[in-house]
Image (cartoon, rainbow, N blue to C red):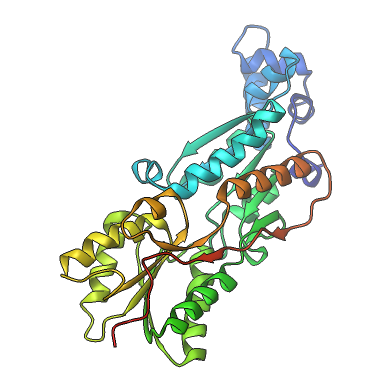
Length: 342
């Protein structure tokens, strides 16, 4: 029965069977009511722990109300998340689907090492019907741990990162190649890149593609790692501009770091795009509000969030849904990119 239990969420009947008591005895013990002996209560509590069962699942069952909630845990600093255009748009896309279906989003901003336990408690405690997994890493420990408990989920990331989970992803490899080839066509021969967190799967994919394409084109390329924040993005740009052979163009892994770079360029007495071309990623409103407006690799993040959520509903309802790439990012040239000075 152990293998069967891992394939689905444990119920009050499973706890009762494992403890050798009736379901009503489980309810009595878990609500600390009189009616069962101390030894029986301890046996019931041990069975509940072994099965990963939580009392609020029983409460939901007894009330007759099904849970209609999708979980999303994000391991980013809360203050940074509020400034990150990608997640604001992504969450709005999720909500656009949930609102039509009368469902809710359970959102937690957490530390990375907390996420497995958060999803486990949500699922085994009956608080969610399924989850969206974001910021996948290479050999991500969440994947085997959450697959084992039978969590219905959709992973936002490449199939090489998602294990057995259905996944929806953007083609980061193709997008970074298009960005580099565009800048090279303008005449840039030294291109820098400011990446997000190095351990994230999409950072790994973009970095590998960046290195390959600059090598293929016979030009220079250098990646500096940041964390998507304006502060670390600015420091990464300074490191690039202090190089003896500084780049004439820089690609960024998000819009916030690209906007922050404008101040750094001004610090150095340089101008955009005459001395340095900047190319952002995601193409949020920030790109169009700056002066000069930022060229960007653009994709519809709101639609991406909605697409991921629709895939999750198929998974939760037992409908086969093939993993697939979403609409790839496309280049939108604006005034922040131009040929380098002669």
